[in-house]
Image (cartoon, rainbow, N blue to C red; front, side, top):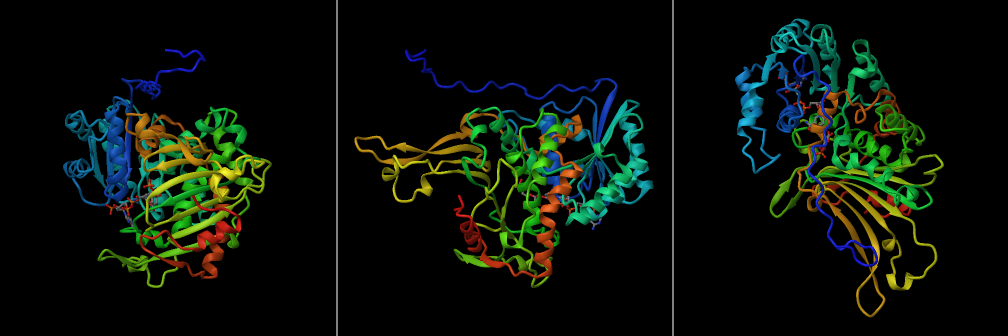
Length: 513
Ligand code: NDP
Ligand code: BG6
């Protein structure tokens, strides 16, 4: 099968279907995990948390003894919780198998306890209920706070004083938003630390659980061809793009208090940037990785107002359908200036990245849905092939695209000779399309993150100093935008967004990918 010159003539075999999850340390007979979803009646719990827990159960990743308890103020019986949860579970993991039986087994382990978020008494009742299920085993407890941020601290206080584990670990997963700015975030951290140690707090940024984001360090640090190019010497600019083709539907009340910069840029896009740009960590240990992320965030310049543009979607009629404006949402105050779109240019003042623009663009109600990292390389020195490339030399530079979603892929745009007797070049892609290469469905980000929290793996969770560093970059500009009441540029629902983002990019000689 080997050709004379040593090149393999056989196509690459599909990768082996190996179980890639480390085995558990749990002592099977003696320990148990109780997972309490606080805010179990809510949107996130239904959409993401219960389905992710089921997927872990289905994959055999939950320990033998586990209990899932929903906790919220709504009145619900165990049976009603199970009915609610069952509506969101799917057999997507392996559609060839009938997973109905597995679903029933999973639902049997789900219970509900109604209670207030600030009631020690209600959490004591929860503790008693959990103990019944734990049946004298070493009881590890995980609380997932899927509630609005103004009640985080009350819930943590009650959970830690009345329902924490007596003989195992107690961990708390906290959902964003982690404050609105540096001060409120620091205050939240201080309050949480009254009741929990830092290593009990798992701050979630679900983008860190996405397959392609996890793969970013593998791509960089395990492929010799990329790391030497990963610097100002070869990279012209890097773009982090987030687009959704729907508006704030149903979440306008929450969104208006935050806006797109806090909702997407300060966390999801900045986390991707930190992993993209950090130096090689000493090891894959959580603290080594987070140390490098903090270092690169601290090397960044706080964002300036000159380097930010904002937009807000307005209503638009297309094909006879009227799409609403952001302010048509009843929960959004009339005349709100909250941005639903923003673009920004950030800079890292260190030896590797000096002068390279890191551009971010995030928007709701745009024409497509995607999350991507685009790395645009410099021009090839000299002009050997310029005349064969066409007039737009910018278009002929290499570009590496990491498509986080949808249709996960990594592709590299290269110049290639068009086959034939002439000498004309065109741009082609070296393309790693996940769906073509890997048969297994990609797990949802929440599956990975929940599993990590159960295993005590902190690598993909945000440490408090990292959070401080992230807020210091955005807080000043957010304050200025609000104090100066900067009016966003209005763009039609379903469009490509406001033109101001192109002016911002042009200022740094960048063209959005
Ligand atoms: P919800 O608004 O659906 O709230 C969750 C539950 O909290 C509700 O079912 C309700 O339960 C209780 N609750 C709501 N408002 C209040 C209130 N004012 N006082 C006391 N209890 C209240 O939130 P989501 O499920 O959408 O989100 C949960 C958390 O996750 C939030 O922090 C959110 O920012 C974050 N998040 C959500 C995402 C999503 O896609 N939904 C994405 C990323 C983060 P009950 O009345 O039964 O007590
Ligand atoms: C959340 C934001 O963190 O991420 C939402 O609050 C956004 O506004 C969501 O829609 C996007 O997540 P995903 O995984 O669907 O890209």
